[in-house]
Image (cartoon, rainbow over all chains, first blue to last red; front, side):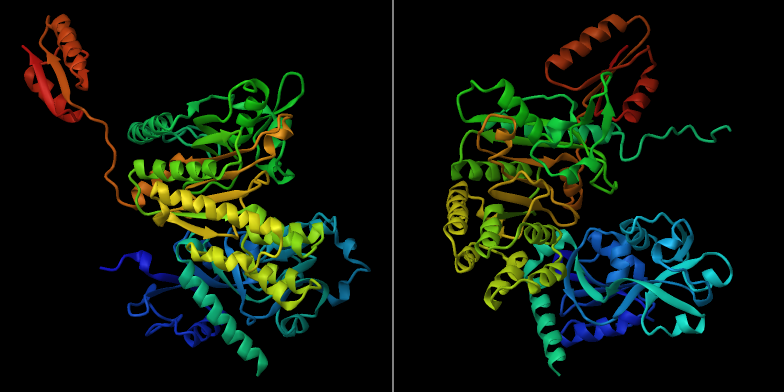
Length: 220
Length: 394
C-alpha cells in the first residue's frame, strides 16, 4: 500500500472558488474523477496522480493546511487573513478578486472616518476589521455575523459594516455606500510549513507549472 | 455552585503528565542526557525566572508578547525563560569566562512561551539541547547537526529531514543589491513566513534589473540536495555570500564523514524565528508534525551582547514533539518494566521487605504489597497492577 507521504493532499473551498480552483489545477494535470463540491465523498482520491482532494467549508481550508491535514490549499486572501493561520502563501492565483471595505447607510453618512469611533460595526471579518480600525486609532464594537452583513444597519444592529464587495450591487440595493477601502483580496495557493519542506519537489513543480499557466492566461 | 465532576482546571497552555506519559518522557530524556554526556557536553541548569532585560537581549522586540512576565518585590520585570540559549549565553559570559574554549554545555528543561496552544505546542514545553561556544569552525556546526540527528535516531525516529540554511547568505544577497533597511526587514519577514506573494510584491517595487529580481523572488525556493549549492553560487555576486556558501560546503563535507547526509537537504530560505542567528541555521521536520521537531544554528554575537564576545552554535529539540513523532511513526509505546509483585500472609511483612530488597538488588522492578493478603488476593493485585510475576510469602 502507498504511504500517505507519497500523496499530495489538496484542500479546496466549496462555493465560488471551487470550480475556478479545480479548473486551474486540472490545467496542470492535477485532478480526479468526480471532483465536485457537490460530492458526498469527503476525500476524493486520484491514485494514479497520487493526489487527494479535501473539499471543505471555505473558512476551514486554512485550518486543514495549518495542521498539515492538507499539504496545500486554495483560499481567498480575505478568509486567510481573517483566520490568522500560520501557513505559507505561495502564489496569487488572480481569480476571486474582491475587496474588503467599510460601508454605511447613505442617509446616515458622517463627515470623516473617525466620526464612527466607538460605534458598532457588523462583519464576518472581525480580525481584519479590528486591525484596520486600530491602525486608524479607532475603538469599535465588533458584531460578528455569519451572513447577510448588510442587514446590520437596516435593522439597527450596527452603524456600519465591514464586508467584501465584488460588484457593489448588494450595497446599492441596500442603500449602502462604501466609505473606506480596506484591502484587495484574490485567491491564494497556500501550503503547510512542514509539507513545503518534506514535499518540496512536488509542490515547487506545481507552483512553477501554475505560474506558467497564469502568465500565459495574462498574455491572452 | 457545586461541581458535578471533580475536575480542576489548570492555566491555559499547561498540561499534566500522567504516569504513562511521564514515563515515556523521562525515558526519552534519560537517553538524550546520556547521549549528550557521551559527546562531551556538560549539563547546566539555569533559573526558570530571569530578568526580562536579559532574556530580550539580542532578540527583537517581537519576542515580548510571548513572554510570561511578572513583577518582583522590587518592581523589576522578570520573565519565565522562553528558550535556553540566551540564559546559557548569560551564564557563560558572566560565570564561565575562565573555562578553556570551546565550552560544551547541554540542558534539558522546560521553557515558557505564550502562544496559541496546539498539539505539540503548549505554553510550557520541554527542550533538550546543546550550546557549543568559543569556535567559528565548520567542525562545530557539523557536530551540532550530527548530534541533533543522533538525538532523533536514539529516540527511535528514522523518518525526518534536516534543512540547512545560511542566514548570512540571505544578508549578503540583500546587501549586494543595496536594498534599504526597511525593505530588507520587510523581505526578511516575508521570507520567514514564506509569503511568496508579499515577497513578489516587495521585489516588484524595487528598482533593480530583472535578473536581480528573479534571484530575490527565488530565495524561498532554494531547496534541494548538495547540487543546490552549485546553483546558489551562480547567484552569489559578492565575497560575503560566497563565504556563506563555502561554509555550507565545508559543513556538508564533514557531515559526509558523520554518515548522516541522507537526512540533510539545503533550504537557503530558512530564517529562524530568533533574530540572534548569524550563520548556518537548520530545522528538522518529521512527517505528520506541523512544526519543526528541532532547530538551531550559529549565533556569533549573542555573547557579546552580554559583554563577552564569543562565537557559538547550538540546537534544541522539542521533547513533546519527539514523543508525537514517535506516535506518528508508530513506534511501540514505551512502558516501564514491571517485574515482580511481592505479596505476603499476615506476620510475614518483615520477611517480605527483605525479599523485595534482594530482588531489587538483582535489578528487578519490584512492588511490595502494603498489607497482608491471601494468595488469591495477591494474584489479583499482581494482575491489576500489571506485574509479570508474583512472589508470595505464605
